[in-house]
Length: 239
Image (cartoon, rainbow, N blue to C red; front, side, top):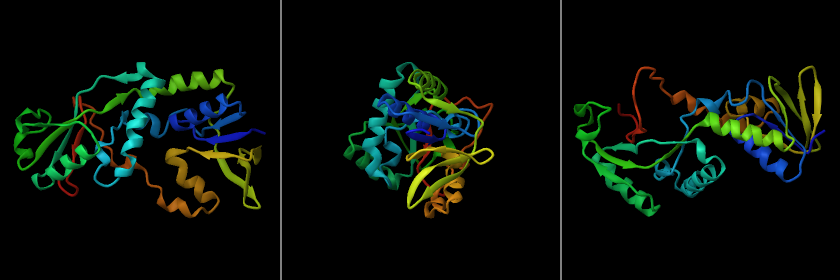
């Protein structure tokens, strides 16, 4: 029996485990594969300033900025030097973006198209270019530092272990089942399963399972490209 069960051994799961264990709780982390094998080590390592979200998700910009400060404090050695991110936007939306960035007090610069070396200039005709600073971290190093801290605080970590089902009765969580119907008991279960979240929610017919979609389906792998900064095309539906 544990005070808290955390399902998912990525950065989110381990950070949660660390915080709770530092509060004196007995915590177990359950990961179906290797630690960080899902979204954690498959992401691009950017802790966003919030600039990408000003148009549709302005309410989270402040939290994005707080996240940058938090990761700098937690793992300063994990930060990777990177050039400014470029935001390519059609002229009819450029002023809108600039006004939104300014409203959220996000610094940016304008940039001539011919200085964008990564894309052929003729492909950028009709676009404006804004540049802003994002922070990039090594996900692997953050994961390692997190793991060391968790073990030092007595967190139990089970890898290669799938959660088959959440156990609940009388509208209260009682624990989870793993393996051959083995039960781990707890009154608190934190789901930090990333890519596996939808299937876990489906296991107890959660209404919310239908709303989880992997963002990794939008990623592109360019093994021979040399790109040293983020490139964002802010014109949905256009190449």
